[in-house]
Image (cartoon, rainbow, N blue to C red; front, top):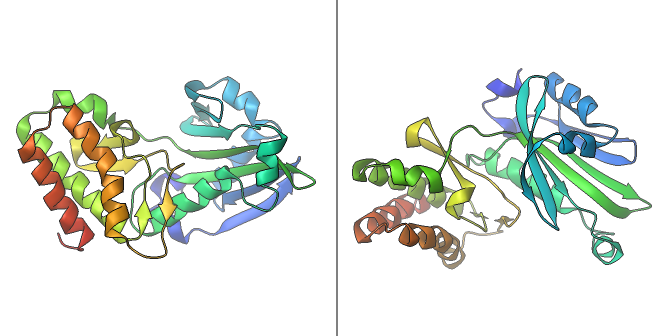
Length: 246
């Protein structure tokens, strides 16, 4: 099976091992094991040659090319002893995001496919951690919106409303539904949600929390001058997704 043809990543088994000071989890696919060899012994060497998209105090992420394919590599920085102490008995943010993405995909919510997770620990003390995932081809909603006519905007909002409603019905929150975190594919026929650092998996579906999550999307819609008709389209479609309709 090729990872590029993968239809249901939720059923792919995971391998785990220790190597070079890293705890490692990865999809049990031949292509992924070759990618792991490219990352080790120091993933920072790969990140240094990447097209950096984000470089902050907490994380650094960029597009990398491995074996002729593009991927997104994200590092969760080593932020010192106080930070590490909080994770002595807890999984790192990288492992949390890696696991959450797999749950999203298993419930039919499109997010980037997580391929490899690396967690650097010495005597349980957390250092750097990383997630390698497939790069997503498409158009950021924030950039694509001004190029759309009204009819296409209505169609895209209907699709996004149902997509987000389905996610909430499954008991997931994205945590940061700004338009930069939504990638449209096939001219707006489908969407991939990126950047799950603020995401959560709830033990139950919460209408109040779901509406609060959707509120971040609506902020950008209003900032873009969406208007009441478009907002109604979004909310109606979100209700359909939330109730499992359509």
